[in-house]
Image 1 (cartoon, rainbow, N blue to C red):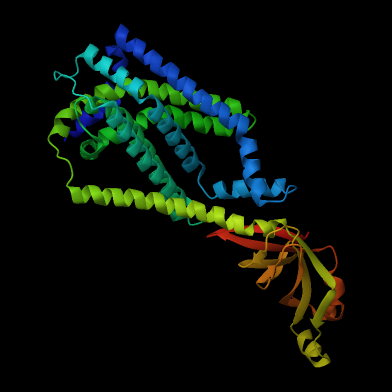
Image 2: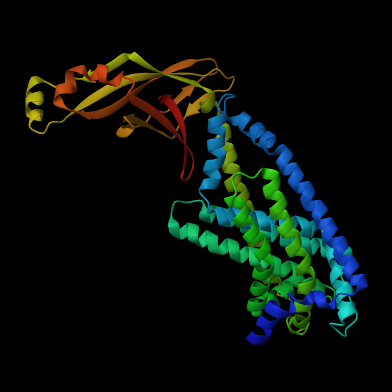
Length: 438
């Protein structure tokens, strides 16, 4: 383990000033890497901008009726509104970094190798892994980051402030760690070190790892915050600034990581590979997290699939079926003192299924409001509606009103002051509205 002052010096001074070690050959490779990263992120930005509406519309059109564009936007916003904006931003930055890492790791290796030789950072000759092994190492790192980002999403997908704050902290931790691992590792890999051993060295020198990651992630983080405040900018302009800052950070991190990572080689060589049981345990954990995240995201997809027919059905409140348990004269007289009385109200809701798939209504709640104020809450009974069929379900609810209104309860309910919203349970903490009466 390096002394703390040494770690701080490497992360805060040596790495940012690494450009002073550049010579013609290493500078040329750095420019090539910078240009390639610009092209890769430019392609990603173009694909996102040109296809984002089409991709969202095609997915949601499967679930929602064609004229539910507003509801579709609500659905997308609802999923991501449950997250702190910084969590989503950090995830996007981490994923864009991993895209560059997966596609351009041979170029990054060339930048690091030529700089190591030009600056004479280490006396030992290169002893590199085969290219296929390096690719497999990067894939494993990518899977680890994917599992981490998915888990953080579900931690923060809550109204609990503690969970959201925890997700926020973890998102920064994962972002800084991913930058540190990605750019401190090439110089060590070039001398026959593998991630399973390097991780131990990075953890022992956490101040260097996280400090380096935070410093070189800073341009993209600051730019993302600035861009998010300019809502008048187009999506293309926002992505151009965000990815431009990301490219700058990547370029300087590639050379800074070589300078700051070289002193870690001696520490890494003192560490041994984990025992087989530990490696198996780590793989079980990784596969388990990936499977759990896949199940959770798949559960939302399946839930939306099963409820897609619910959203495409037609609903109509049959006011002719209205009935109420009108209180007796004695009950009215008794209620005058409290100026309120509870009346049992019953009415039918007709559900027509125009699709060719049977519909089942399960978890739901029905909210009834007057002038925007919640008056009663109940639920529709569970019902199965065959393709092309119409079913009628009875809604029962207690309604508290003034005694003077008891005899004109039907007139009160059929005015335009009332609204009825059916909330469908999609997932934990996520209910979707269907407006029966507005």
